[in-house]
Length: 134
Image (cartoon, rainbow, N blue to C red; front, side):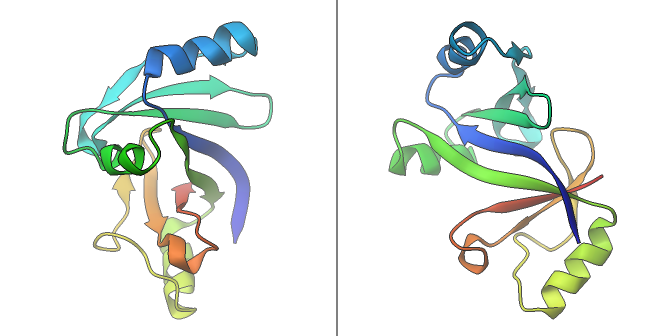
C-alpha cells in the first residue's frame, strides 16, 4: 500500500535558524519559507536525493504545531509522510483494518498541493503518519 517516503517533518522553534543549519552546516538545498495558512504553519523544504525534510514552524497561536513545541521546546520529528497511489483506497483499507484517520476522514490539500490524510499516532507505534497521493 505505502510507496516511497515523501518527507520527514520536523517542528522547529526558529525556522530561520533551522533552515540555516541545513543549508550552511549540512550543505543541503533549502527552499524559501512558504506560509501555509490553511494548515497553520510556515514550511521550508530541504531537498535530499531520495526524499525531503519538511521544517514546520507555527503560524499563530492556533497552529497545531504550537502544542507540539509546548511539549518539545527544542523541536523534533512531528510526522512521517508516505506516498500512496490512491489515497481513498488506502484510507478505506486502513479503516477496514481498524486504523483511525484524523479529522473528518476526507483528504485535504497538503503543502505539496496534493491530497493528504493523517493517521492516529496511537495506531502506528506513536508516530503521526501522513499519507499523500503520489
